[in-house]
Length: 370
Image (cartoon, rainbow, N blue to C red; front, side, top):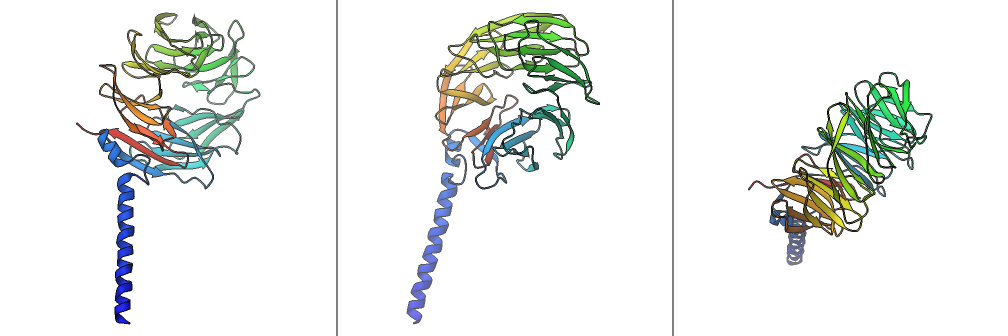
């Protein structure tokens, strides 16, 4: 009897050791991580933080947004989770809209998140997630709204730009392009407002009155939002060109360059300090010199820039790999298997990489110190 008990004890201990060993291998091989730590080490990357978001079974993570010091994760059921970019801890989480109602792209103005839910303009406190104001428009909203200290600028499906006072939401005037084209993108500043149309017009106007300051016409519709960086505007057009237009004084603009891409453009460029990255459908990602507009490199399998650091571009591909490109020598350095990564956010501000999967696991990576 004693001998048999001893055998059972040995067997039990053996099973526990085997279980512990399997857990250890799982952690080492990254079975519970988005990317294996061993692969990250070989690619000179490290995990800053990793978090499992509190989404329900059957719910999917739909989008990741980077705005200011936060990461915003939106599920397919319109559940929004705000995470601190530095530590990955949850700042707030809440349902933003009923299931099936479209939530527009988020914009940040000071300490407010601005977005649309259907035909309603929503303002949310970034610290608490508390809804400050909800204003229902009498018209359908075409694209993300913009604002400055005095006004909101909202594109309607009526092909008008509606200007509302920020303090009370009263509409003070409206404008339209001369050709009555649809307004698809808005940039607001204290001194000017720029809007783009599906006819390829990029128009600057006074922020407080219906007065045009200047106009630039591309060959076809502007694809996606206009990206403003300082006094420069970057945008893609369905004429297959990427443009950089510089604002010169209050009432003038200058075409700095245009770069023709090898395919159809339906998304905006990603702009960093020295490089403009543009995706063309079926043709991959192209890196363009920000100053000259000349080609640096092209990656046929590339989809989007994830981050940039010390002359290196970290690019996600259609095959779910991370490819590291050298922007100086215009060559591929190495690639990493990102097979589990299905969600990501383009980060043009610093070297941190934000990735996730549809099950709600989100991670932040960064290059290791050399």
